Amino acid sequence: MSNQPPIEVPQGAIRLNTDSQKLEFYAQDRWYEMATDSPILGNATNSPDASGGARGVIAGNNPTSNVIQYFTIPVQGNAIDFGDLSQNRFVGGSGSSRTRGIFMGGDPGPSGRLDDIDFITIAATGNAQDFGDLTVARAHGCGTSNQTRCCMMGGSASSGNQSHIDHITTASTGNAKDFGDLIEATEHAAGASSPTRGMVAGGNPGTANRIQFITITTLGDAQDFGDLQALGDTMMGGGMASPIRAIFAGNYTNKIESVTIASKGNSQEFGTMTTSRGCPHSNTDSVRGIISGGYTPGSTNTMEYIYIMTEGSGVDFGDLVADTANGFDTVSTAHGGL
Image 1 (cartoon, rainbow, N blue to C red):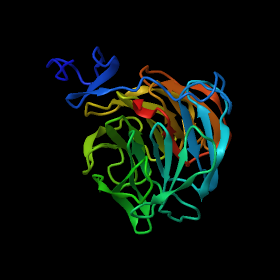
Image 2: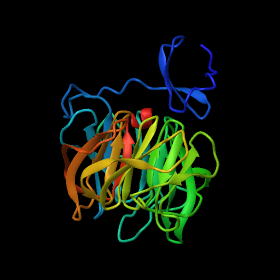
Image 3: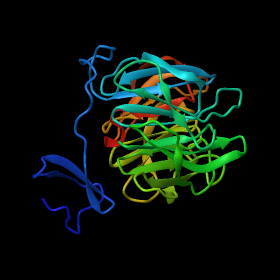
């Protein structure tokens, strides 16, 4: 089957490759194969022995905690204890492949900065293990990732806000390496990823409503994508994505906005959450986005979900193990269409 699409094929188009019998989507002038399976983790209920598809994982909390918890994204229900991080911390960056979850940096409290990188095997509950170190110890960064690479974007170090982008190869262990720089130094941004692009939205200070992006497979500096709208800045917000659409929510509002990942431009109104949230967690497979915890204004354990390709409002999902905010998120076995 030819890899050259007709000129009129729009960004985000999906096709069935009749040679490989695989679904593909069109972005950045080429076709990419889509993953159409999710790891099987049990039987149709959200329990340790059950299975319902992709697994979402969050970790840490403010005040500092080392607790890791998980849930099955397609199956509504409460979160379950997974294990522990290597130490108490919060406000770090995170990402994942289909098999591994990565937790980078963070604040051990009070106002400390860590360079530690932990990893877990998402399908197997247990404690996190040492992966390596960041190039600069920092907290308040955000993570983006695809199947092979995980990036830590910006954050705050002892010397101030950072523009550094670090990267690791998720399947290995070792210290992070330099990837490039954000357009400007920022912290508290929201991250979201497709298999090709890493999106960074908002942040503090600087141009707080800016959306930037990187091509995850290609080292280099971030580029301008567009601007957030009603959210203003997503300092204290969360990000989710399918292969086609990125979602940003929070910033002490109930607003949800979206962008089409392959096409630069400003965000558009998507819907509303069940409640206003600051510093929420966000996890996703290629169909559902889960928004959980955060400050409402006190920290909460509530969870809600949206369908990423269908504009609308959040629906109750279940409860976290405990009230949780400002931890690590964006870890799942199928985020962004992995």
